[in-house]
Length: 598
Image 1 (cartoon, rainbow, N blue to C red):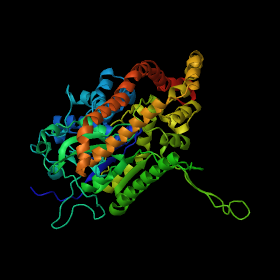
Image 2 (image 1 turned 90 degrees about the vertical axis):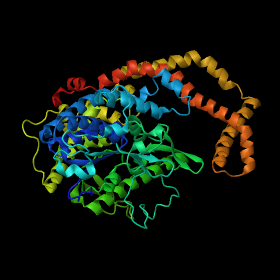
Image 3 (image 1 turned 45 degrees about the vertical axis):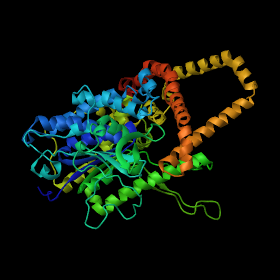
Image 4 (image 1 turned 45 degrees about the horizontal axis):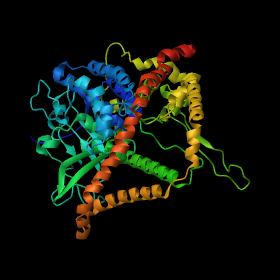
């Protein structure tokens, strides 16, 4: 069957940004459901934190579209899905998934193996807390199981048959980045790999500027066409790869899928936000004509006095590059598709931008400073609240009710006008009939509109990745400081003895030998891969066993032994401290300490 002639094709992009982005996207999805737009989405492209929530929504959508004929599906069904997600997602994230990756003795012991990492553990937790309860399957959910089979349309294909449906069956694309080529890597229910672009006779399907010497083609038809060990690739692994923040999680490996002659290729995947944190590239690849872009990514802030030492400069440079990529991707979308065809919402929407004048010859500003905005009041959010919401941490730890509901309501309010404008552009004027949906996150509305001392304090603390309970609970901070002082007092004699001792020459030499072995191991392995220098390969035959042993010991110490030692602390934190943090950030407590805003 020929590919359909596209007239209107709505795409939805959900950016990265950890659970901050996930909660913000729930609010945007709720607004889309309320306006009757969700049923019209044909492609969902998600990255990192957006992938976490997109996969969860897709599983709920699969159940709906496979249980009802097209003519019986109503917009209220989508509202019901989002109402369920709104409640269940908070409960799942309150378990603190990031800390849970260190809480299992069995998993930490398993880390000693080369084929298991913190990312694999995260994939298991995603499956356990988010996806398995919805899918109704005891084991792992495979990507190929995500295909939607509507009851009234056998052999349905979204590229060809969506024109015949009122409730569209969207394509889900989860985006990661491959370290091998630096390109984007996409997971769908059909296949996985670098994106397929239409080949033209005598021409490359990639841009001329793409000069990376090897391209990793993906199977065109299905997972059944790839090597057996990768046919059952799981949804949890795909989401973990998309949300694999470099430095925080180990890259997720895909082995045996490619070979370069006799040389094996291990694809190493990291966070999709490295390549395209907004996910708009996949929507262009799918020839979408109209777009909803929900961008909850962290954006670079102004720095009055940037540090000039090596590490801060490198970190700041990385932020500049990421900000530049974000701007270029969005500008290209607006220029090629038209700003009127894009509903674009983001966390700094409506905040003031100040234009500072230069200092004149007499030490005073040559011209008055200018300020554009803020315009947050136009959609019902106080500027001081929006500023703090934009700075909430990018993390996968526990989010309190105050944090989660604020982000969801912010996404809901900020997207209202943009989605209404796009609906009119598309000719979709109807919305869900009957009583307005009773979203739970509306409980925070008074505070998000007016602020409040305790509320603003919680949002200010929400920017930190560590130490939040100590900053929010004064008595816990006092106990922690006193415990540290007592511990120092008791251990001081032993600590003083260590400080007064000197390192032996043997210890220094041993350390240098270990560092040298590590360096040689990495360099020689690289030379072996390239099949260079026969004499080096001969040497490797003798060094292979001790080098492999050393790598195993190193992996055991840093990925297994040390986390095993910390497991008791992590379990204690999850058992005692995490509940204290959640109670401190509950809506019930906020209503008690700020009754005037209720």
